[in-house]
Length: 121
Ligand code: 5GP
Image (cartoon, rainbow, N blue to C red; front, side):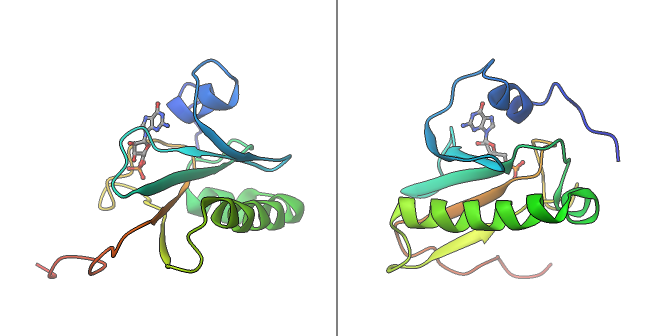
């Protein structure tokens, strides 16, 4: 799968564009979404060059896969959303309107998020 090294999250990882960091370790970086859709809206991205979930899940090494999951867990703890509940979303491809072609998981919380989706068309 082709990876665009000039995507915005690659630039954030390289420090070329600033972000409001929430958590970072060897495997992942977590930062606040620039256009939050809820009181808590954090993006968690792996440090490796993966375009989307399928690319990451099929190509990443085992330590990257586990490290990313643990980083996601630590970010959820740092965000303080466990007690109230939260939603994890990873958009993949055209139907999901994925905007940034670097795998990421959205953490949304801080209020009642309502139904998961509108009615199926
Ligand atoms: P996607 O649709 O790809 O799942 O979501 C991409 C997310 O990245 C959007 O929620 C958008 O607001 C966020 N985003 C886009 N550009 C930037 C940026 O430069 N900085 C940060 N922090 N978030 C961004």
